[in-house]
Amino acid sequence: MAEHFVTLFSGSFLASGLSLYRSLEQHSSDFLLWVLCMDETVEARLRSFALPRLRVMPLRTIETPALLIAKSERTVAEYCWTMTPFSITAVFDRDHSAQRVTYVDADLFFFGDPVALLRELDEAGRDVLITEHAYDPEYDQSKTSGRFCVQFVTFRRNPGGNRVCRWWQERCVEWCYNRHEGGKFGDQKYLNVWPEIFSREVYVLKAVSEALAPWNARLLARDGRPPVFYHFHGLRYLSQSRIRLYEGYRVGIAALELYDQYVRHLAAVQREFQLTALEIPMVPKVRTLRKMLGRLYGRLRDRRAIVSLKGMTPGK
Image 1 (tube, one colour):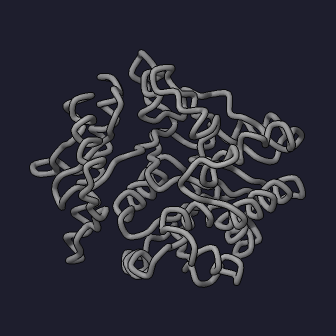
Image 2 (cartoon, rainbow, N blue to C red):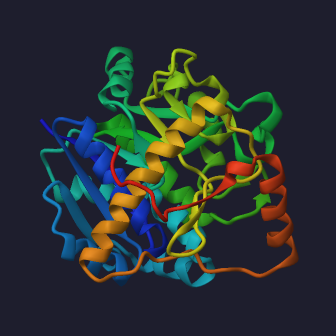
C-alpha cells in the first residue's frame, strides 16, 4: 500500500517541491505526494509536469468560510501555516485507501526511505508521529520556536489521529501568526503540549540523527552516512543562478556534502524548467536593513552560504 505524503507551497518554493518529489521517487518504493497549491501558479505548473505519483489539490477546494476569514487577516506565510493541519484531512477525504498521511515541508529532501522513520510509529502503536528540533546547544531556539518542528508529522486514519488533527486545526484557525504570544508561535508551538495532553496518541521520534537541519547538522553520522532526510531550511533562490543555502549557522564539512547533492538536484529541476520554457520563481526581495545585515551575518558565519548553479552538473 502506498505511503501518502502531503506538502504545501506557493510559487517561490516550486523548485524545492519538485526536488522533494524526486527524492521520494528515488528512495520510496511506493508513494503518493499530494500538494496543496497555495496559488494558481503552482497548480498550473504542477499540472503541466504531469508527474505520475503527484496529486494536485487546489487551495480553493478545501477553504471554508472560517479559513477565508483567517486568510484575510494573515500574511501568505501565516496562512500556509494555518493550512498545514487541513492538508492532512484533505488527503484523507480524497483517498479513502490512505491509512496514514505524513505532512512534510517542501524544503525537505530524502536521502533514505522514510519508512525507516514510520517504523518507529508502527512499533510504538501510536497514532501521531512528531519530530524534535533537537537543536545543537549553540543554536537552541526552543523557547521561541518550540521543542518540536512542523517538518515531518504523521497522522493515522483512526479516532486518535483525527482527535489530534482536529484540535490542531481549531487552534490554527483561532491563532496562527509569525510572532510570539502567550506561548504560541505560528502552527508550531502548539505541538509542545501534545505529549502531555495526547499522551496515548502522540509518539516522539527517537532517531533524531535521521531528521537533520542546519540547526543540528553536527549530528550527522561520522561515517558519512546521510540521514533519512535533511531539512534545507533557509535555502532561497536569489536569482535564476544564485542560491543562498542557509544563514546564521555553521553546518560542518560533512553536511556540505548533503548541500552539494541537493544543489545538483536543484540544477536538474532547473533543467526541467528550461525544457518547458519556465523560470524558477524566486522569493520576493525585501530590501530592509535587517535583511541586509542578516545576509551579511550569514556570510560571516560560513562562506559557503551562497552558491551558483552555473556550471553545476545536474543529478547525483
